[in-house]
Image (tube, rainbow, N blue to C red; front, top):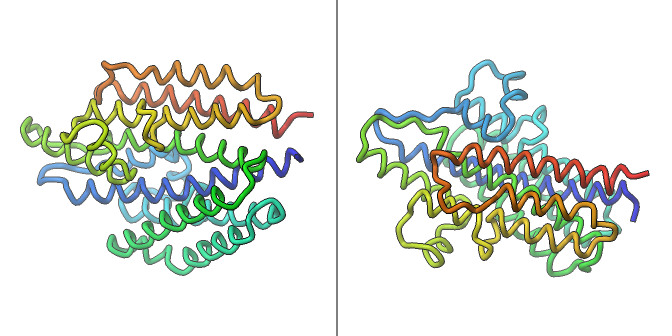
Length: 308
């Protein structure tokens, strides 16, 4: 398989996953906003920092407020990680690889691109429209994943797409886990505990994880338990541990993957799944995981897509 085609498949999968997870990230932020009590504030600047986009955001917007950040994350084509940009890039990659992909995939991605072209601006103007548009993005992304899984041969192209999807998903889960840092609560211990629980519940809902958490972990939403669940539970498809298991499985089915396998082991080591990890020391752990994922991506790119 040509390295260029493989790279396009990898990035097409990453772009689609990023579009869905950015939609989930925004929905989670919106839910948190609705739950904030008097005296609490949402740090919009923290939000773009969590997404890893603060430097590019400040190139185009002087003030980090809700309106600016929603436009930047949803419809700004100057941001390569905005939802509309991700779908556009995925569409272009799909167009060049139509002989490798199910025919219906192009139709669905093109349809999603046209929908966002017509509705992305309205999604930035009011929260109700935003929720509908973002949910549509999530639903269509699910339909595309089901189409690929159910109709595409599970050969090398499929494994490369699966690899890209899980690398991106692990990274975005780690970023969404840091959402608490964007909320500034008043100094009221009783209120603080109640609102923190609501924030973690919003996060679980945004990852479609709330029902699984209640069934597999606890009926009570506690910060340490949620962190452990989203980092380490191998049964939940959006946990980082599950994503790394998928990456390991993909590498086992790809040729010449042996040099990359130790890097996945290092990722497991960074994850640690320490029982004492809590909200207070979470950010340092998440930054380590994100750096390890970036290192793995760079090594993967050099090994498969840039090899002579």
